[in-house]
Image 1 (cartoon, rainbow, N blue to C red):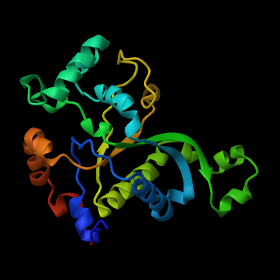
Image 2: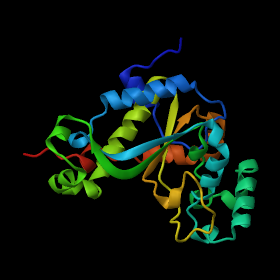
Image 3: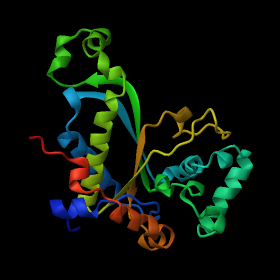
Length: 239
């Protein structure tokens, strides 16, 4: 039986990184984590103004196609698609190549994790007691007008963090990504996951490739540790 972590161990274990191993966790554990996120995550006014899609190991080709669209260099994004694919394949085999020295030249490989959780906005649903008060979605929209804006992102972020902690509690690693090229700029073909760019946030779930992360991103990891603000830089006790 897999050892579970304490609450403090879970918080300390969770961090963002680039590379996962190809080994996939048991799908039943992922299902359990997702069910627990529904059971225990707070959602503002119990209004689910987002959808959560899960792409398992069988979607590896689509994930690789998606990963090509995570590089943050606009010049790379405008290359002919076949050149972008060739550059990405070269990166997978030679991530230490000088041409990938800076972060904006690298890809966010966390999206090719064994399990990719994708968040999108959608027409919201209210599953709680208030649903009985309204006869139609139009009545609910007029009562909760703010939920058609960015307020839905609050619940997405809370839910995503909840999944990341539940995963780490079960000794499964998690890593976030939101670096996706605007489809109006990109020259790539349609991608099932990309869906014309309507992605708000993703989480990769699997097992971290620590050796590769330390090899490629050790400086970035150290920067994140040293770059934490002081308590009073962010938090102000009011007097």
